[in-house]
Length: 196
Image (cartoon, rainbow, N blue to C red; front, side, top):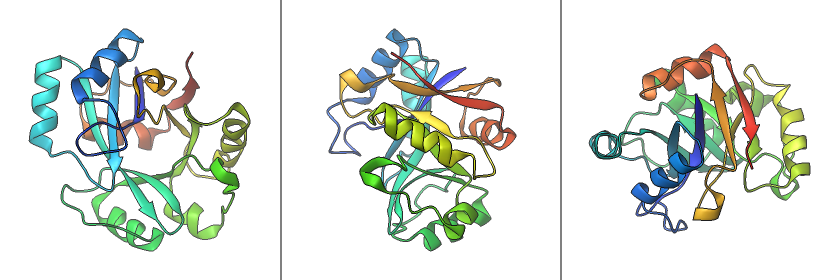
């Protein structure tokens, strides 16, 4: 199963030009089996995601791209309504009791190689392939993933139509919802892939 784990859509990410339905149509066209809406510091309400899944017949999952003092962190499984988490320590503290998983987003962008014990302890891994980063940045990110407990993930970081489906994560398991996504991530049975 091929899921783009890093997409942005209106109205929750004002930096995106994509409506959720348009994002789904493009993802389907480009051979993806699902997408994950990872908005900046805001999660989609479960009822809105369920309605979008019902209307489109497509797997649409939720995550949050947290803006922290250590860079952007992709959080999977945080409870709805979790407030701003401006530090890595706050994100880790919120993730632990919720059973959420944290992945350092685009870790080689802008020369940010600040991987240390705190990051490795707080995060499960990194985004090893980001569709908006260069090939060299992704090579560096894949190398960083080797120091974490789980494999790196892949996502397009799509904000525009042209970016949708540039990268994704290939899972062995069939995923239908956030619980299934968390179980698949915890299993480590996946790989980040560059597409087109």
